Amino acid sequence: MNVHMRADVVCWRIPPIKTKRFVAQWAVKPDAVTTMSPAGCPHVNGFKVDNWKQNLRVIYQCFVWSGSAETRKRKAKSCICHMCGAHLNRLHSCLYCVFFACFAKKHIHEHAKSKRHNLAIDLLYGGIYCFMCQDYIYDKEMEQIAKEEQRKAWKMQGTATLNNAPSIGEKYSTWEPTKRELELLRHNPKRRRITSNCTIGLRGLINLGNTCFMNCIVQALTHTPLLRDFFLSDRHKCEMQSNSCLVCEMSQLFQEFYSGHRSPHIPFRLLHLVWTHARHLAGYEQQDAHEFLIAALDVLHRHCKDDNGKKANNPNHCNCIIDQIFTGGLQSDVTCQACHGVSTTIDPFWDISLDLPGSSTPFWPLSPGGDGSALNGESHTTGATTLTDCLRRFTRPEHLGSSAKIKCSGCHSYQESTKQLTMKKLPIVACFHLKRFEHSAKLRRKITTYVSFPLELDMTPFMASSKESRMNGQYQQTVDPFNNDNKYSLFAVVNHQGTLESGHYTTFIRQHKDQWFKCDDAIITKASIKDVLDSEGYLLFYHKQFLEYE
Image 1 (spheres, rainbow, N blue to C red):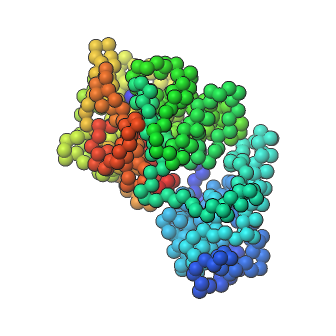
Image 2: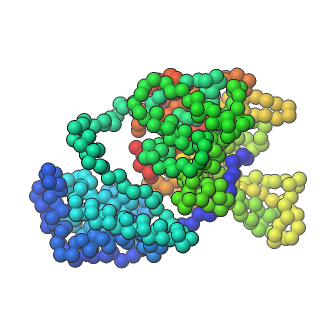
């Protein structure tokens, strides 16, 4: 079992606590007008009565920006959907009665329709949504209140940092256009729109001499939604003295990819920085794409800085963008066979390496059925091994044997034991490495076993929280259609063609919801979903669904 570990990460979660609904002191004045006038939304006038400014400030202070530790705790406890109890799915609050509900599942829409409450506020970004206009609206007075409360919250968080207290939030000032920029916007009214057939973000990469292993990983990273959003919003604040920062180069690379240029990009500077910081990858020999991925994430992690200004190699905590997106928590339970005492450890990981049938590792084959395959839309009718099979193999109990006895804290003696791995915390982006290259003293070969993998993946059966419902290696599946916390969508697949000695890497990437493209160094061609799912698969990249990056 191969997992790439990093320093320990502590995770906590506040259990949902139902709170009383807050009722504001105003009435709704329905307006028959449903179109947005040039002056703005006409329906805000029904909200602007009595002490509306103070009420709006309270909502921003308590449930949106939450500058103090007390308000953050209150928000974590009370901001759940009053219909389904979910914390996520773009929670909005009704401005008239402070009713919390999901936007994604349209629970807030149902409330607005039944109560005729036309305005709601996004609890993450603070935007005001009008259900009559069916859009987010701009109101000068409301925007001013939002900015004032946001600045107050940032100031409180900054004070907490100075006092060595925990601080959260991104301390970046909002963009305010200058007079010159306003003039340019007026003289250039045309705007670039993203359409369903848009090719912005698609760009080939020149092979600089056996560098397809690097090109395929760059394509996967540049199409990772949250990583793309981070770099395109200019969030990296570099403090390195030399020009050797890999994060700065990645930022420039994202700008190149999404500039709209169609000619292939030449990543010579990226290659030079990789050689500088990961010397084992230097040279023009063919390298392993998985090894390059781990090395790239490691260098990016070390060159990032967290929100508190501490170096990212802090062994106890890191809030860099790499850890936020790629780091998960793997739980290892070692059970003593004598007293049945359990020793549990949780280690961070960036990817999961999965053994394949045909390798020299034991425990194959696995019996199909009742394993989560049906949950993930996979089938054994063709006899093919599925990604779920590999995950079952990874998370099933393993007897360590008499040659690997451990000292039990309960028995105070060395005893045989079993070890089982489960997912304690899932990353935003889950990367699965199918171990196709086998190296041993007697054998060096590539395993070409076909593995079926789904477009949509539910990791619930492999969570530590699901362990109690796991009996004799089988899973009792309870499908919750409203819980998307553990559900993923495929967005990139790295493939290797050829043998262990000579081969070539390509990547399938997902550009829009149902549009896939094949990246073969400098050549980009359109691909079908069948092309993707029929491919051999070496590295599989999945993104959490609830972030709604579509």
